[in-house]
Image (tube, rainbow, N blue to C red; front, side, top):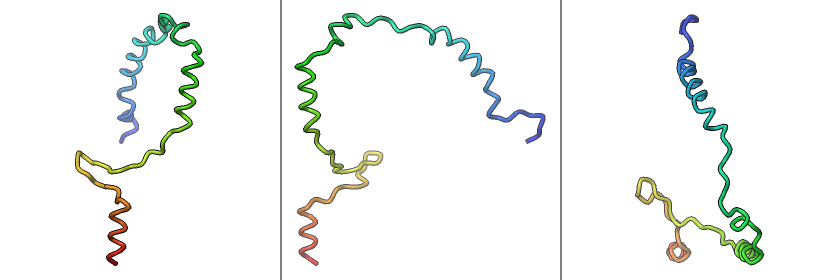
Length: 89
């Protein structure tokens, strides 16, 4: 690349700067107020106890199979299949 030509990565920079300048008034606005915020977002002791009980018994996820483009690319071998395979050998 010659020194007189700007890098291809910089060609879109003026357009991006213009777009950002056009959007800046939209970005600078404050979020609207949430209706009934005190009622909806207030502390609820019953809900908090329910959340704590639910979080205490969180199950460990186990991957059963992996699909790639809709086709099974990997599947977990069950204990029964492992035991029958080891009994044959």
